[in-house]
Length: 281
Image (tube, rainbow, N blue to C red; front, top):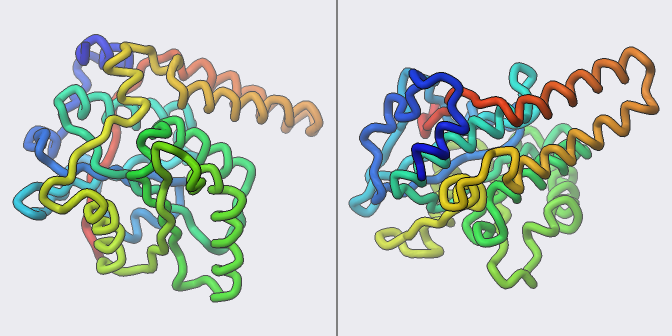
């Protein structure tokens, strides 16, 4: 099942899913992916160059802790569709080797920019990646508190909690909710975020979960474009297409070309490029 699922995601048979750093991982590892938009400050908190050191690992309660960086949506060099495929490939290959995710950290800058419609759409895609059953293991970590005026930060934090992230934090959900945390600069704060995930389930016995996109790709054998995350991404692109109808001719043409290209890419296999990290400056 895994082999067939990965064939749908990998463009070149020579592309190695088990990239450097992956070969030593096993199902007993505590795996925590880090997600979020491009420019959130992930590379400020964690720096491990791609293909130089793909897995930065630490011992914790006798088990390896593996923190996996992922490419962020809105990357100017990559389409959102390609980013989704790259995230899906790593998660599918890991799950196929019985390596489950112990938690997920979604990083978002509290300052200087306010939450945009595109940011909201990305959060919806993120939720579809995790699924409702995975929300209890999600940490919503806000960054850049060191440059944010206190009053502004508090106000935006409330906006996220009551509006933009409300559905992720809704306490009425039977399967659990995400947890919101501040992540100032410094390694000690990052470890506090990791501890929040581990303390919920016990450091030594922390078990893993199956994210929604892993279940759909590997267990159900769906194609990427059939997953909930891809469907949500197409909704986002459709909104962009609709909005372009009221734009200038040049902008409309550019947006249309972008939408068409990304929708096409959802049906084209891709090669892997994902970082594993936990290095501090």
